[in-house]
Length: 126
Image 1 (cartoon, rainbow, N blue to C red):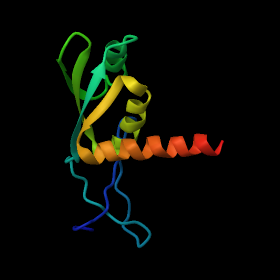
Image 2 (image 1 turned 180 degrees about the horizontal axis):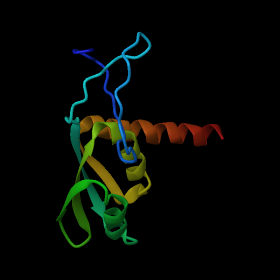
Image 3 (image 1 turned 30 degrees about the horizontal axis):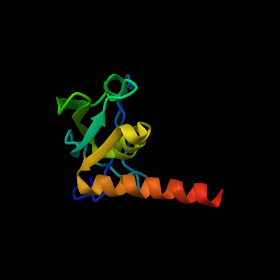
Image 4 (image 1 turned 30 degrees about the vertical axis):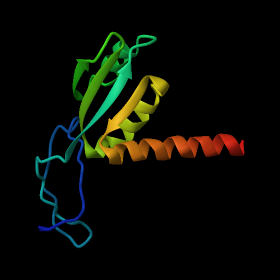
C-alpha cells in the first residue's frame, strides 16, 4: 500500500454501480482513498450588464458560492471550488469577458492574465 503519496488521485464515482477488490500486482499501485479534497476559493467583481448576474448564477450553479451587492450594478462573487476544477473554472470565468474582474487570490489572477496574454499573442500572430 502506498502511504505517503505525492500524487493526487481523483475518482469520479458518480456512475459506478459496484466495486470489487483487485489482486495486487506489480502493475497496479494500491492508493488509499481519502474523502479530503483540496479546496480553494476565488473572489471576483461582477458588473450586471446584459444579465451577467443571472447568467453567472446559472453558469456557476454547481459551485458553492456567495454573492454580495456592492452598488446598483456591481456584485462581489465568491466561489468555493476543488483545486482539480481550477482550469474549468478559469475558462468559465473568461467567458464573461469584461463583466467579471477576478480580485483574489493573486495566483488565480496571474493564471487569468497568462491566459489572456496567450490569447492576445495568438491574435497578433494571426
